[in-house]
Image (spheres, rainbow, N blue to C red):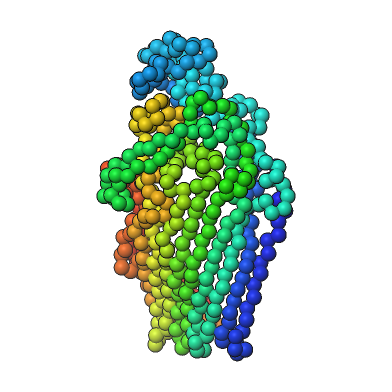
Length: 426
Protein backbone atom coordinates (compact mmCIF):
# COMPACT_ATOMS: atom_id res chain seq x y z
CA UNK A 1 0.00 0.00 0.00
CA UNK A 2 2.71 2.43 0.99
CA UNK A 3 6.42 2.28 1.67
CA UNK A 4 7.89 5.52 3.01
CA UNK A 5 11.54 6.06 3.76
CA UNK A 6 12.59 9.01 5.89
CA UNK A 7 15.28 10.31 8.16
CA UNK A 8 13.92 11.91 11.35
CA UNK A 9 16.87 13.73 12.94
CA UNK A 10 16.86 15.24 16.42
CA UNK A 11 19.56 17.87 16.67
CA UNK A 12 20.43 19.94 19.74
CA UNK A 13 23.22 22.13 21.04
CA UNK A 14 23.88 23.77 24.42
CA UNK A 15 26.48 26.48 25.12
CA UNK A 16 27.69 27.43 28.60
CA UNK A 17 28.06 31.19 28.20
CA UNK A 18 30.27 31.98 31.21
CA UNK A 19 31.79 28.57 31.81
CA UNK A 20 30.33 28.39 35.35
CA UNK A 21 27.24 26.29 34.54
CA UNK A 22 24.82 29.11 35.44
CA UNK A 23 23.84 30.48 32.01
CA UNK A 24 23.10 28.28 29.01
CA UNK A 25 22.05 28.98 25.44
CA UNK A 26 20.10 26.13 23.81
CA UNK A 27 18.94 25.44 20.26
CA UNK A 28 17.33 22.44 18.60
CA UNK A 29 15.88 21.27 15.29
CA UNK A 30 13.80 18.09 15.18
CA UNK A 31 11.82 16.35 12.46
CA UNK A 32 8.76 14.26 13.33
CA UNK A 33 6.86 11.97 10.95
CA UNK A 34 3.16 11.27 11.19
CA UNK A 35 2.10 7.75 12.20
CA UNK A 36 -0.78 6.65 9.99
CA UNK A 37 -0.24 3.00 9.05
CA UNK A 38 -3.60 1.76 10.37
CA UNK A 39 -5.42 4.70 8.79
CA UNK A 40 -4.13 3.66 5.35
CA UNK A 41 -5.33 0.11 5.88
CA UNK A 42 -8.84 1.32 6.72
CA UNK A 43 -8.84 3.83 3.89
CA UNK A 44 -8.12 1.18 1.25
CA UNK A 45 -10.33 -1.59 2.62
CA UNK A 46 -13.17 -2.01 0.07
CA UNK A 47 -15.13 -4.30 2.38
CA UNK A 48 -15.44 -1.55 4.95
CA UNK A 49 -16.30 1.15 2.40
CA UNK A 50 -18.89 -0.53 0.19
CA UNK A 51 -21.46 -1.84 2.64
CA UNK A 52 -23.96 1.06 2.46
CA UNK A 53 -25.30 3.30 -0.28
CA UNK A 54 -27.39 6.12 1.20
CA UNK A 55 -29.65 7.91 -1.31
CA UNK A 56 -32.19 10.68 -0.66
CA UNK A 57 -35.67 10.09 -2.08
CA UNK A 58 -38.70 12.35 -2.37
CA UNK A 59 -42.04 10.82 -3.30
CA UNK A 60 -43.09 12.75 -6.39
CA UNK A 61 -39.74 14.44 -7.05
CA UNK A 62 -38.94 18.17 -7.22
CA UNK A 63 -39.75 18.60 -3.52
CA UNK A 64 -39.22 22.36 -3.56
CA UNK A 65 -41.36 23.07 -6.62
CA UNK A 66 -38.60 25.01 -8.34
CA UNK A 67 -40.02 26.65 -11.48
CA UNK A 68 -38.79 25.16 -14.74
CA UNK A 69 -37.90 21.77 -13.30
CA UNK A 70 -39.96 18.66 -14.09
CA UNK A 71 -41.92 16.87 -11.43
CA UNK A 72 -39.02 14.46 -11.09
CA UNK A 73 -35.50 14.15 -12.46
CA UNK A 74 -35.45 12.68 -15.98
CA UNK A 75 -33.68 9.38 -16.43
CA UNK A 76 -32.98 7.08 -19.38
CA UNK A 77 -35.91 4.87 -18.39
CA UNK A 78 -38.29 7.81 -17.93
CA UNK A 79 -37.06 10.88 -19.83
CA UNK A 80 -40.27 12.84 -19.22
CA UNK A 81 -40.62 12.05 -15.55
CA UNK A 82 -44.21 10.91 -16.00
CA UNK A 83 -43.78 7.89 -13.74
CA UNK A 84 -43.15 10.01 -10.65
CA UNK A 85 -46.45 9.96 -8.82
CA UNK A 86 -46.59 11.78 -5.51
CA UNK A 87 -48.04 9.78 -2.67
CA UNK A 88 -47.80 6.30 -4.18
CA UNK A 89 -45.05 5.27 -1.75
CA UNK A 90 -42.93 3.78 -4.53
CA UNK A 91 -39.34 4.79 -5.24
CA UNK A 92 -39.27 5.66 -8.93
CA UNK A 93 -35.71 5.59 -10.22
CA UNK A 94 -32.63 3.42 -10.52
CA UNK A 95 -30.57 3.34 -7.31
CA UNK A 96 -27.56 1.92 -9.22
CA UNK A 97 -27.52 4.99 -11.47
CA UNK A 98 -24.91 7.27 -9.87
CA UNK A 99 -26.79 10.43 -10.94
CA UNK A 100 -29.99 11.76 -9.35
CA UNK A 101 -32.83 10.28 -11.33
CA UNK A 102 -36.57 9.85 -10.99
CA UNK A 103 -37.50 10.49 -7.38
CA UNK A 104 -33.93 9.83 -6.18
CA UNK A 105 -32.58 13.33 -5.59
CA UNK A 106 -29.02 12.63 -4.38
CA UNK A 107 -26.03 11.07 -6.18
CA UNK A 108 -24.47 7.73 -5.35
CA UNK A 109 -21.34 8.33 -3.27
CA UNK A 110 -20.56 4.60 -2.93
CA UNK A 111 -19.48 3.48 -6.41
CA UNK A 112 -18.36 0.05 -5.22
CA UNK A 113 -21.58 -0.79 -3.37
CA UNK A 114 -21.78 -4.53 -2.53
CA UNK A 115 -18.45 -5.13 -4.26
CA UNK A 116 -14.95 -6.01 -3.09
CA UNK A 117 -13.46 -4.01 -5.96
CA UNK A 118 -11.14 -1.21 -4.75
CA UNK A 119 -12.63 2.25 -5.22
CA UNK A 120 -9.96 4.30 -3.44
CA UNK A 121 -6.39 4.54 -4.70
CA UNK A 122 -3.02 5.95 -3.66
CA UNK A 123 -0.74 7.84 -6.02
CA UNK A 124 2.46 5.70 -6.24
CA UNK A 125 4.56 8.87 -6.39
CA UNK A 126 3.07 9.86 -3.02
CA UNK A 127 2.93 6.43 -1.34
CA UNK A 128 6.45 5.21 -2.11
CA UNK A 129 9.92 6.65 -1.72
CA UNK A 130 11.97 9.11 0.27
CA UNK A 131 10.63 12.31 1.85
CA UNK A 132 6.95 11.69 1.02
CA UNK A 133 5.56 11.09 4.51
CA UNK A 134 3.77 13.98 6.21
CA UNK A 135 5.22 15.46 9.37
CA UNK A 136 6.63 18.62 10.89
CA UNK A 137 9.87 20.34 11.76
CA UNK A 138 10.18 21.90 15.19
CA UNK A 139 12.79 24.57 15.88
CA UNK A 140 13.57 26.08 19.26
CA UNK A 141 15.95 28.51 20.88
CA UNK A 142 16.13 29.35 24.58
CA UNK A 143 18.23 30.80 27.35
CA UNK A 144 18.32 29.37 30.86
CA UNK A 145 19.90 31.27 33.75
CA UNK A 146 20.41 30.39 37.41
CA UNK A 147 19.72 33.57 39.38
CA UNK A 148 20.99 32.08 42.61
CA UNK A 149 21.43 28.63 44.10
CA UNK A 150 18.19 26.71 43.49
CA UNK A 151 16.45 29.49 41.50
CA UNK A 152 16.44 29.53 37.70
CA UNK A 153 14.49 31.01 34.79
CA UNK A 154 14.09 29.77 31.23
CA UNK A 155 12.82 31.71 28.19
CA UNK A 156 12.33 29.93 24.87
CA UNK A 157 10.95 30.40 21.36
CA UNK A 158 9.42 27.47 19.48
CA UNK A 159 8.26 27.12 15.88
CA UNK A 160 6.57 24.22 14.09
CA UNK A 161 6.27 23.99 10.32
CA UNK A 162 4.15 21.19 8.83
CA UNK A 163 4.94 19.66 5.44
CA UNK A 164 3.97 16.96 2.92
CA UNK A 165 0.23 17.40 3.17
CA UNK A 166 -1.87 14.94 1.21
CA UNK A 167 -5.21 15.45 -0.47
CA UNK A 168 -7.92 13.28 -2.04
CA UNK A 169 -8.50 14.16 -5.70
CA UNK A 170 -11.68 12.95 -7.39
CA UNK A 171 -10.31 12.47 -10.90
CA UNK A 172 -13.79 12.07 -12.34
CA UNK A 173 -14.59 15.80 -11.98
CA UNK A 174 -12.78 19.12 -12.20
CA UNK A 175 -13.23 22.56 -10.63
CA UNK A 176 -15.75 23.53 -13.31
CA UNK A 177 -18.17 20.94 -11.92
CA UNK A 178 -18.92 23.02 -8.83
CA UNK A 179 -21.38 25.90 -8.52
CA UNK A 180 -20.98 28.47 -5.75
CA UNK A 181 -23.81 30.18 -3.91
CA UNK A 182 -24.15 32.52 -0.95
CA UNK A 183 -26.41 32.37 2.06
CA UNK A 184 -27.11 35.00 4.67
CA UNK A 185 -26.18 34.38 8.28
CA UNK A 186 -28.95 35.64 10.59
CA UNK A 187 -28.22 38.57 12.84
CA UNK A 188 -27.32 37.30 16.29
CA UNK A 189 -25.45 39.23 18.98
CA UNK A 190 -23.77 35.98 20.04
CA UNK A 191 -21.91 35.83 16.71
CA UNK A 192 -18.77 37.87 15.93
CA UNK A 193 -19.90 41.25 14.64
CA UNK A 194 -23.51 40.41 15.44
CA UNK A 195 -23.99 38.22 12.36
CA UNK A 196 -25.83 39.51 9.31
CA UNK A 197 -23.02 38.68 6.88
CA UNK A 198 -22.90 36.27 3.94
CA UNK A 199 -20.89 33.08 3.44
CA UNK A 200 -20.16 31.17 0.26
CA UNK A 201 -20.75 27.45 -0.23
CA UNK A 202 -20.29 24.96 -3.07
CA UNK A 203 -22.59 22.42 -4.68
CA UNK A 204 -21.79 19.83 -7.34
CA UNK A 205 -23.66 20.50 -10.58
CA UNK A 206 -25.77 17.38 -11.42
CA UNK A 207 -24.56 17.51 -15.02
CA UNK A 208 -21.08 16.52 -13.82
CA UNK A 209 -22.03 13.75 -11.45
CA UNK A 210 -20.00 10.63 -12.17
CA UNK A 211 -18.74 7.57 -10.36
CA UNK A 212 -16.07 8.90 -7.94
CA UNK A 213 -12.47 8.09 -8.81
CA UNK A 214 -10.59 9.11 -5.67
CA UNK A 215 -6.83 9.09 -5.40
CA UNK A 216 -4.71 10.31 -2.49
CA UNK A 217 -1.76 12.37 -3.71
CA UNK A 218 0.47 15.37 -2.96
CA UNK A 219 -1.32 18.57 -1.90
CA UNK A 220 1.60 20.49 -3.42
CA UNK A 221 0.42 19.36 -6.86
CA UNK A 222 -2.67 21.53 -6.36
CA UNK A 223 -1.26 24.68 -4.83
CA UNK A 224 -0.27 23.24 -1.46
CA UNK A 225 -1.39 23.84 2.10
CA UNK A 226 0.15 25.95 4.85
CA UNK A 227 0.09 25.19 8.55
CA UNK A 228 2.51 26.61 11.09
CA UNK A 229 2.63 27.43 14.78
CA UNK A 230 5.02 29.51 16.85
CA UNK A 231 5.10 30.65 20.44
CA UNK A 232 7.04 31.65 23.54
CA UNK A 233 7.53 29.84 26.85
CA UNK A 234 8.52 31.49 30.15
CA UNK A 235 9.41 29.09 32.99
CA UNK A 236 10.88 29.36 36.46
CA UNK A 237 11.88 26.97 39.22
CA UNK A 238 12.87 27.52 42.86
CA UNK A 239 13.87 24.95 45.46
CA UNK A 240 15.36 26.08 48.77
CA UNK A 241 14.73 25.91 52.56
CA UNK A 242 11.57 23.85 52.41
CA UNK A 243 10.14 25.77 49.44
CA UNK A 244 9.43 24.18 46.07
CA UNK A 245 7.99 26.47 43.40
CA UNK A 246 7.69 25.81 39.67
CA UNK A 247 5.62 27.41 36.96
CA UNK A 248 5.41 28.91 33.55
CA UNK A 249 3.47 30.94 31.02
CA UNK A 250 3.13 30.17 27.33
CA UNK A 251 1.66 32.02 24.35
CA UNK A 252 1.35 30.88 20.78
CA UNK A 253 -0.63 31.22 17.57
CA UNK A 254 -1.40 29.02 14.58
CA UNK A 255 -1.84 29.94 10.91
CA UNK A 256 -3.61 27.85 8.25
CA UNK A 257 -4.07 28.47 4.53
CA UNK A 258 -5.92 26.11 2.17
CA UNK A 259 -7.16 28.72 -0.36
CA UNK A 260 -5.12 27.51 -3.35
CA UNK A 261 -5.98 23.92 -2.55
CA UNK A 262 -9.74 24.46 -2.37
CA UNK A 263 -9.66 26.43 -5.63
CA UNK A 264 -8.00 23.55 -7.47
CA UNK A 265 -9.96 20.80 -5.67
CA UNK A 266 -13.34 22.17 -4.59
CA UNK A 267 -14.46 18.68 -3.54
CA UNK A 268 -12.35 18.91 -0.37
CA UNK A 269 -14.68 21.64 0.96
CA UNK A 270 -17.71 19.33 1.16
CA UNK A 271 -15.75 16.14 1.86
CA UNK A 272 -17.25 15.64 5.32
CA UNK A 273 -20.77 16.84 4.59
CA UNK A 274 -22.16 13.36 3.92
CA UNK A 275 -20.96 12.08 7.30
CA UNK A 276 -22.69 14.82 9.27
CA UNK A 277 -19.64 17.06 9.69
CA UNK A 278 -19.91 20.80 9.22
CA UNK A 279 -18.14 22.41 6.27
CA UNK A 280 -16.18 25.66 6.39
CA UNK A 281 -17.26 28.59 4.24
CA UNK A 282 -14.94 29.50 1.36
CA UNK A 283 -14.11 32.88 2.93
CA UNK A 284 -12.39 31.18 5.87
CA UNK A 285 -9.73 29.25 3.94
CA UNK A 286 -6.97 31.56 5.26
CA UNK A 287 -7.11 32.07 9.00
CA UNK A 288 -4.91 32.65 12.03
CA UNK A 289 -5.72 32.31 15.69
CA UNK A 290 -5.01 35.17 18.10
CA UNK A 291 -2.20 34.67 20.59
CA UNK A 292 -3.49 31.88 22.85
CA UNK A 293 -2.07 31.85 26.39
CA UNK A 294 -1.94 29.46 29.29
CA UNK A 295 -0.12 29.41 32.59
CA UNK A 296 0.43 27.21 35.62
CA UNK A 297 2.18 27.34 39.01
CA UNK A 298 2.92 24.52 41.43
CA UNK A 299 4.32 25.02 44.90
CA UNK A 300 4.78 23.45 48.31
CA UNK A 301 6.07 24.65 51.70
CA UNK A 302 6.86 22.80 54.91
CA UNK A 303 5.70 24.68 58.01
CA UNK A 304 6.82 23.98 61.57
CA UNK A 305 5.69 20.65 63.04
CA UNK A 306 6.12 19.07 59.58
CA UNK A 307 2.88 20.48 58.23
CA UNK A 308 3.10 20.59 54.42
CA UNK A 309 0.95 22.88 52.28
CA UNK A 310 0.97 22.48 48.50
CA UNK A 311 -1.09 23.83 45.65
CA UNK A 312 -1.50 23.93 41.90
CA UNK A 313 -2.91 26.85 39.92
CA UNK A 314 -3.57 26.90 36.20
CA UNK A 315 -5.37 29.04 33.65
CA UNK A 316 -6.00 28.15 30.02
CA UNK A 317 -8.04 29.31 27.06
CA UNK A 318 -11.49 27.87 26.54
CA UNK A 319 -12.42 25.63 23.62
CA UNK A 320 -12.72 27.14 20.11
CA UNK A 321 -16.32 28.04 19.36
CA UNK A 322 -18.31 27.05 16.30
CA UNK A 323 -21.63 28.28 14.98
CA UNK A 324 -23.07 25.45 12.92
CA UNK A 325 -25.91 26.57 10.67
CA UNK A 326 -28.11 23.99 9.00
CA UNK A 327 -28.71 25.25 5.46
CA UNK A 328 -32.35 24.54 4.54
CA UNK A 329 -32.53 22.85 1.16
CA UNK A 330 -35.13 25.35 -0.14
CA UNK A 331 -32.71 28.19 0.67
CA UNK A 332 -29.89 26.46 -1.21
CA UNK A 333 -32.25 25.66 -4.08
CA UNK A 334 -33.37 29.27 -4.37
CA UNK A 335 -29.75 30.48 -4.46
CA UNK A 336 -28.73 27.88 -7.04
CA UNK A 337 -31.87 27.89 -9.19
CA UNK A 338 -32.02 24.12 -8.96
CA UNK A 339 -32.33 21.34 -6.45
CA UNK A 340 -28.94 21.09 -4.68
CA UNK A 341 -26.99 17.89 -5.08
CA UNK A 342 -26.09 18.02 -1.38
CA UNK A 343 -29.55 18.12 0.21
CA UNK A 344 -28.37 18.29 3.83
CA UNK A 345 -25.45 20.52 4.66
CA UNK A 346 -24.22 22.21 7.83
CA UNK A 347 -21.77 25.09 7.71
CA UNK A 348 -19.66 26.68 10.44
CA UNK A 349 -20.25 30.42 9.99
CA UNK A 350 -17.51 31.53 12.44
CA UNK A 351 -13.99 31.89 11.11
CA UNK A 352 -11.93 29.15 12.81
CA UNK A 353 -9.92 30.35 15.79
CA UNK A 354 -11.74 33.67 16.22
CA UNK A 355 -14.09 32.87 19.14
CA UNK A 356 -13.51 30.88 22.33
CA UNK A 357 -15.46 29.71 25.32
CA UNK A 358 -14.86 30.57 28.98
CA UNK A 359 -11.29 30.64 30.21
CA UNK A 360 -10.70 27.75 32.61
CA UNK A 361 -8.96 28.88 35.83
CA UNK A 362 -8.54 26.70 38.90
CA UNK A 363 -6.66 26.40 42.20
CA UNK A 364 -6.22 23.06 43.99
CA UNK A 365 -4.67 22.78 47.47
CA UNK A 366 -3.51 20.08 49.85
CA UNK A 367 -2.65 20.29 53.56
CA UNK A 368 -0.97 17.30 55.16
CA UNK A 369 1.00 16.09 58.16
CA UNK A 370 2.99 12.92 58.67
CA UNK A 371 3.41 11.48 62.19
CA UNK A 372 6.06 8.86 62.93
CA UNK A 373 4.78 5.86 64.87
CA UNK A 374 6.68 2.90 66.22
CA UNK A 375 10.03 2.06 64.73
CA UNK A 376 11.52 1.05 61.40
CA UNK A 377 10.28 4.22 59.72
CA UNK A 378 6.56 3.57 60.10
CA UNK A 379 4.35 6.67 59.87
CA UNK A 380 0.80 7.83 59.39
CA UNK A 381 -0.10 10.63 57.04
CA UNK A 382 -3.32 12.65 57.18
CA UNK A 383 -4.36 14.99 54.38
CA UNK A 384 -7.05 17.52 53.51
CA UNK A 385 -7.39 18.15 49.76
CA UNK A 386 -9.49 20.92 48.24
CA UNK A 387 -10.22 20.73 44.52
CA UNK A 388 -11.27 23.96 42.78
CA UNK A 389 -10.81 26.16 45.86
CA UNK A 390 -12.64 29.17 44.40
CA UNK A 391 -15.47 27.01 43.03
CA UNK A 392 -14.96 28.22 39.45
CA UNK A 393 -17.82 27.34 37.11
CA UNK A 394 -16.44 27.96 33.61
CA UNK A 395 -18.49 26.43 30.81
CA UNK A 396 -16.55 23.51 29.36
CA UNK A 397 -18.91 22.37 26.60
CA UNK A 398 -21.61 24.26 24.71
CA UNK A 399 -24.18 23.65 22.01
CA UNK A 400 -22.92 24.95 18.70
CA UNK A 401 -26.05 24.53 16.58
CA UNK A 402 -27.17 28.03 15.56
CA UNK A 403 -30.62 28.83 16.91
CA UNK A 404 -32.37 29.35 20.23
CA UNK A 405 -30.09 26.85 21.99
CA UNK A 406 -26.84 28.24 20.62
CA UNK A 407 -24.07 28.34 23.29
CA UNK A 408 -26.34 26.65 25.82
CA UNK A 409 -24.00 25.04 28.40
CA UNK A 410 -23.91 21.25 28.39
CA UNK A 411 -20.85 20.82 30.62
CA UNK A 412 -19.37 22.90 33.46
CA UNK A 413 -16.11 22.94 35.34
CA UNK A 414 -16.41 20.49 38.23
CA UNK A 415 -17.35 22.25 41.47
CA UNK A 416 -15.41 22.56 44.71
CA UNK A 417 -14.61 19.21 46.29
CA UNK A 418 -13.17 18.37 49.73
CA UNK A 419 -11.36 15.12 50.37
CA UNK A 420 -9.92 13.73 53.64
CA UNK A 421 -7.35 10.94 53.29
CA UNK A 422 -5.18 8.85 55.56
CA UNK A 423 -2.10 6.86 54.63
CA UNK A 424 -0.13 4.27 56.61
CA UNK A 425 3.48 3.64 55.60
CA UNK A 426 5.41 0.75 57.12
